[in-house]
Length: 281
Length: 224
Image (cartoon, rainbow over all chains, first blue to last red; front, side):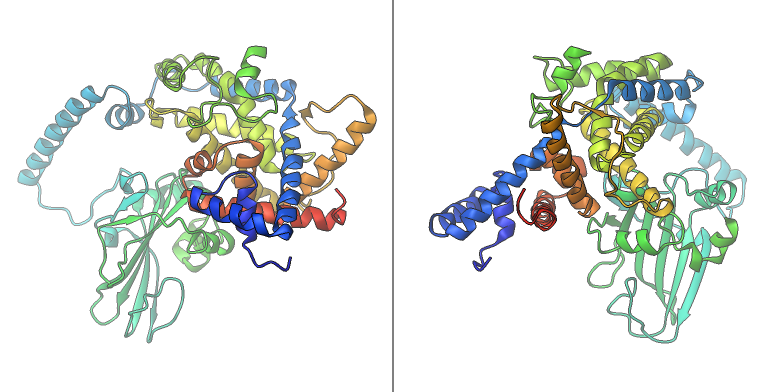
């Protein structure tokens, strides 16, 4: 095509997918450009062909066999919900919202009283035993920075004398840096037992100044099937170099996901660089 | 069954129910009625009546499996893959049913899960299989081909060409094209299902359509 008009706009105009302002621009251009008009007609005929694929439907016998298989697999599932599922259901979902508020308050009171009693009776413990998932979301795609991640399992560290470049190196790093990867204890335990990262597993990549061990970048990946590929990626590092308390998931595929998808040795995790994880498999 | 098929698809097998992604509702039923009905079934299942899960499968099985087949490429073993995908989707639905927000329609959740499962299968396929995505089909689980052998042959060839061209797109582009152009969802609905900004979805659709045209033109010399 010799006309330099945007073909991307034409490709959307063919099915009326443009915003009104853009559609007006395309319509006006088409009044005076025969070449683009022909291109649009060609796109239109491709669209008609594409709709032929709607005729492909699944044979009922295939559906029936799939259904039988699913039902046979869930047949032996427990008839009643486990307590953790019940609690999750009651607290967070659309079931019995009023009851959820009272239940939450009751649980908070009991937990506070228990903790208070323990604090009075026992000396503070240095290492907490983690039994619940550590990924806490403020909103569906906003991760709250996990506290105490330095107490987690250290999967590996690397120390560099100078500033290197790479996807996880902050641009404002000015001296030697250290990069540390942590995995939450629950996830590590599951991984070492089953060879799989459990839903809710969190890995933290912390980049610190070697001089004072202060974090200059903090990123996290969370195994969560709500995100593409089953992992969500989060960057807590703000533009001015401070570490934010919350981070939204990074949607741009090119930023994290594609590299983790393509190059990580196992399930989006670079276990090849982390001996602790490598040996756990 | 017949009634259910009619309520799921329009005459051209595209989705009905624009704006609410509610493609399986009873004729005349509103989105909230559909949501309430699903909520009723889910409560029964969560209450221990596992057998009620069959009602949920029955509502969405055709939808999930057809969509899986379209995303996976409509080729010979896509039928088997689609069956595996649908099976995995419903097992995941059963496992995570307690996480479903019963005040919202189930469809976007279900479609997102289908897409994720298909992505996993696609990844496994790339790792474990040497068969290219666009391999020629032999026998499919798909039904609905025309009776006239000549029309049937021409249409079959055209379909295979289209699947082949679709297979040349990136996964994101293919999913966007399947949802928008084959499933017939609006761009806003596609964005809701993919949990992506509408501008991103438009960009994937636009790129996908241009690549499809280019690929088909190249394969046919522009004669099709």
